[in-house]
Image 1: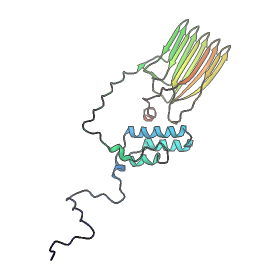
Image 2: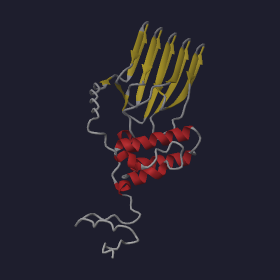
Image 3: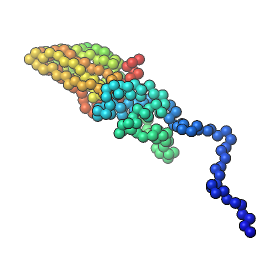
Image 4: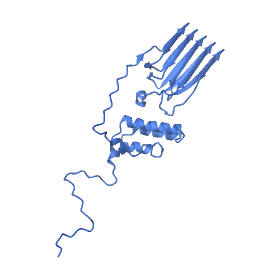
Length: 242
């Protein structure tokens, strides 16, 4: 006669939960409730800008989602904003994965030098003047070139205003303006026996800074255009909105 204990046909019973163990409600995603960082919000905003540039989102859809991305507090609020896009990063759980202990830590980036304070007026008479690198640009800049040349490079500048107006006057001279490729560029002026060219563009981000170039070129030339491959990296919406 077999005296072995009878086995439960449903299989072994699960081990009992330890006392005071947290219980997750059905359908609750704890990962979605975690707080999102500024870097997470900016990553989603970049995906939305790419989708807008590719024609996957309308102007209104893009503006609405960008607004929602910057105001999102949790991963659960960010994830639906890119769920219907091919570049959707997938479940938000990947943000919770920690690198292995043996993985080398990233070396800290050296701090950037402080931006230079510059005069709002540039003048070149029988000579040249240039402004480039990390400098602080305000809401207004005036450039006057007489038998000379002026170079204004905004690709590494620190914008202190959401809109920058550049007034240009050149007589037998030239002025060249370069802006990052992710800002808006507008304007135009009069060319008298000369040329005044502004290669206008509108940024996919409705909150991006706007650069406006206007004035006149007499027996001279003015050219303003974006520099491809150079993007404004230090600007975020809250810095300009206050």
